[in-house]
Amino acid sequence: MCYTIGQGTANYTRAPKGKSIEKGMVKHMEQFRFIWKYIKRHKGQYIGGIITLFILDFANLYIPKVTGIITDGLAAHTIDRNGVLHNIGIILGIGLTLAVGRFLWRYFLFGASRSIEHEIRDDMFAHLETLDVEYYNEHKTGDLMTRFTSDLNAIRMAIGPAVIAAFDAVVMTVMVIGQMMIYVNVKLTLVAIIPMILIAFGELYYGKIMQKRFRERQEAVSELTDFVQESFSGVRVVKAFVRERAQIQEFAKANANAKKKNLAIAKMEAIVIPLLDVVIGISSLLTLLYGGSLTLAGEITIGRFVAFNQYIMMLVWPMLACGEAINMFSQGGASIRRLQEVFEEKPEITDGEHVVNVGGLRGDICLNHLTFIHRGHSEPTLKDISLNINAGTTLAVIGRTGNGKSTLVNLLLHLYNTKRGMIYLDGKDINDIPLKMLRENIAYVPQDNFLFSDTLKSNIAFGTDNEEMEEIVKATKTACIHENIIAFPDGYDTVVGERGVTLSGGQKQRSSIARAIKRDAPILILDDALSAVDTDTEEKILKNLKENRCGKTTILIAHRISTIQNADKILVLEDGEARECGNHRELMALGGIYKEMFDKQQLEAAKSLAISTM
Ligand SMILES: Nc1ncnc2c1ncn2[C@@H]1O[C@H](COP(=O)(O)OP(=O)(O)OP(=O)(O)O)[C@@H](O)[C@H]1O
Ligand SMILES: [Mg+2]
Image (cartoon, rainbow, N blue to C red; front, side, top):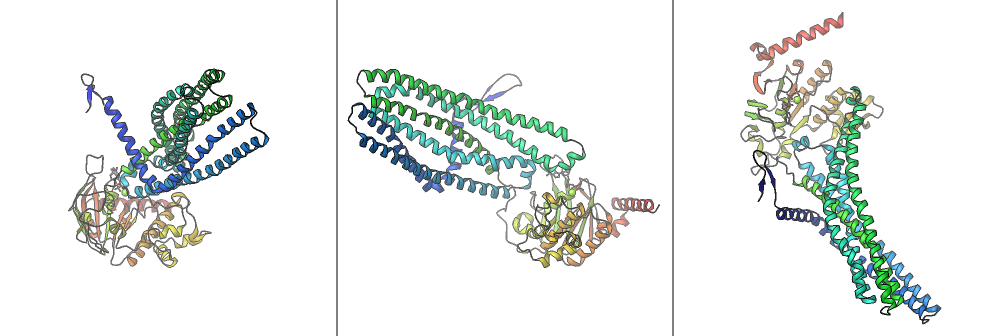
């Protein structure tokens, strides 16, 4: 329950304290549950590592005891040279056990944490691949990259080194304190550990603050990564607009913010570590004062007093380790939360319960009063569009920019959800066709012509399982890009650079067309895919397509009438509405928007011809 404070229009709600602690606990439990799923797969390694740690700590305890025996023996003259050598031999043996043990626990626990990091990374990538395009529209790449790298690293630290540090610290502390009580003196031990108990409470509070600061730091790092990623991708725009200096200043701001958040963490660490030193100092002082008086009173021997001092020093490491472990747990907890946010995202576009396997599609498309509103928009982008596209025919879509042409084809690919009864393929509602099957039956040339930073050959074969050269060449010839490719020094093995930057706009477009043709799907969609090629090449590609795609459905989106005038049907979109529909001849006869566009483009073509012949 929430209660409200404040008056008038300003209402501030705050959860009662008890509730917020409860909420915090639930959150911690969820974080634990998330990571436990992975840890339990590596139970064996964790158990092996922890048992080794146990043995190690036990062996460690013997060193002060043996030193005490030597000291007492020497003081009482009850030990000879051989006795000393024998005890030194025991210390060396323990040292060797420690070395082997340290290797083993590293092997077990670091190995497990590396494996878990790898498994979470795999799972996260697989999960992200299932999410809709809308998710990527709303989330920045840099932020996702940070979750993949630095957050995963923080989690690995929390489930590997932090587990070791925490177990080691707790086991070691308990054992050392037990030994101090049994072997030396209970009262002296209690006096010496009082300051340490205070520190234990302080560290719990410290962990809570650190988790909040780590989360803020990760957010700042995400913003920084995002800025860098966008600056590099948009380097051409930055340079063309001479915005380098402004970018540097912006970067400095984001970088300073990340530094501020890092400093907030460093400040906390800087306070805590010297505090631990103070506590150890106080413990040593109490030991000297009280332990000294007990020794003088003959309650403990000098040897045990020496051993006690060594035990106190042995507690320094567990205390530091505890601080470090809390640090790493807090950081890991903050990062687990950030990964959970990704895993909690569920795709909205999934196969519904009515999906039926349809096998291959013929390519009949029917739009029935299709209306679509983009998320965040109040007005529909597409309004009441009804249309039939028969299998084997070509539909062209033309219309001014921003009129919903790309949206229309994205709907056919089911990249956005539509209500039932609005889109049918081969007579089946699009919502009843499995997504995989639907998309396998549609070859798509996106408007941005994205290419991967790989060879041309792999880019063109993308989406199919074979890299048969014969088929690739057939596709590139159809898309009129073969000649260009073989003219490159590395031919089909040319690496196109990130997003295909080493190709010209037209080459990129035609490579992207070749990639779609290679799929040889029943439906081919070209979204403004001929805008960057000259009219002669365009004519050739259209002719090749006509021959190649005989009997298959093609949807052509374009701004130039020359691209679409031979289509079987032309749809003219205006303000998201289907204003005109028919073939070239019919639309010309109608004398509407299409004819106006045609006349304008003819006039422009005549004008540019006149200028070029002047
Ligand atoms: N993912 C999206 N979320 C919200 N609005 C979008 C999204 N994609 C497109 N829009 C909006 O929908 C409208 C139609 O966009 P669309 O890309 O379909 O136009 P288009 O006809 O293909 O334009 P162009 O000829 O410039 O390619 C635009 O107003 C655009 O801002
Ligand atoms: Mg578009």
